[in-house]
Image 1 (cartoon, helix red, strand yellow):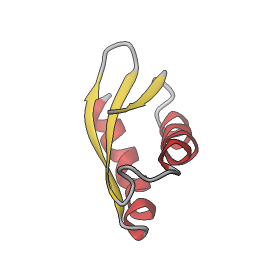
Image 2 (cartoon, one colour):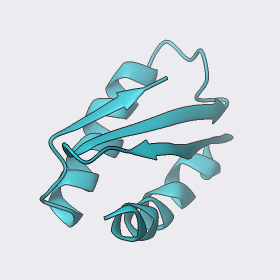
Image 3 (tube, helix red, strand yellow):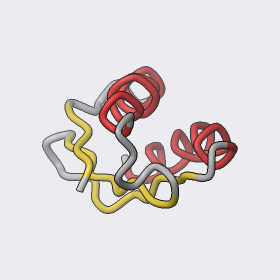
Length: 73
């Protein structure tokens, strides 16, 4: 599943990078939990929670339905 998540993040990443941010995959757990780290302009941004929920989690779950949860570290 990690490879699927990496491929999905590769599709999401350009839109984050356009705003000076990025996302790093930290771990994919067997229970379907994906752990990511927001970097660059996304790290500490007041809108990072919305970016995580609407921009990352929803897209990841659409592309990789096995994902149950996405957590930012």
